[in-house]
Image (cartoon, rainbow, N blue to C red; front, side, top):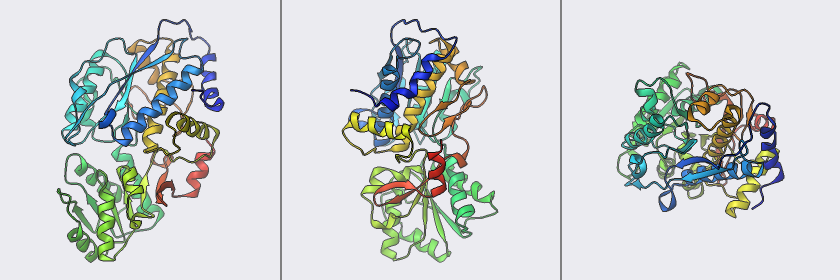
Length: 403
């Protein structure tokens, strides 16, 4: 299928970089990991489609170093909601140039994620985690003594999201009496702690910290205590669809305050199947689908051509996969090589800016820093409105349009 001329033209300049060999030697094999098929979540599926669209555009522009990109996709099985990938124990093929994928960092999934990434680390093959927000214990290169770190990250971490939520509640909206509702399982307690720290940096202590019940029961008791504490807003941290449960409870009590949740609360189920009570809830995002730049329009047109739909189930995940592929392509071109050590070194010192959907990346990584998205002010706050995610603040939309 033909990729939009605008999307294809974004890659042409890469082939004109000086000092880069274009001699072909077979396809460049890029591993793509994470839940697939019937087991794929909508964020994981969206991430894969974003990677596929970027790879197709790169190939239509001539490939990388004169070689086509070949995606080697791994179908992993997600067991029992625990985040454990069956493919975690499989070794990484030695002919991969690099990898991109989803990483579960909650509960037992963190152990599986660590095992999967350990294969890349030991094989000295760069891997970009394009769908992961959780604790660093899932990253073996950061919890063990490794001379070189081959694991990179293109996603808004829990730390970044907590900072965005604190800024939204206090700096922008002036709330001083804030409650926190968090999930009691796995890494979500870390999210609660990060939210408390974000508020503390603004000299705010939560009026109440409550946990969601472990079973899928209502949250009426928690909401009654939050109401009694005279909270002006509620910060939510946990997996989806906690926002729906909270909104349902508020409707039953006929008591409403603004809701600000972590990114997981903006899943399609939370948005499209939610009660009207979630209207106006705010969630951090890395990408909001709005046709405000030629590159965004080209990407959204390519999405429609590829999937037959204008609906992107998880826009942030799609953009993170797309941008990860662009960053890898830029690193391989700069390195002039498909060797893992050369690609890692290039990622840590990218000379030219890389214009992605989320932002234009100026040296996003360094030798000691492998997180691309660390500045909360560069990412937009989304708002749930009429079954869609839109920009909560017009100035953030203008900023995105100027990139």
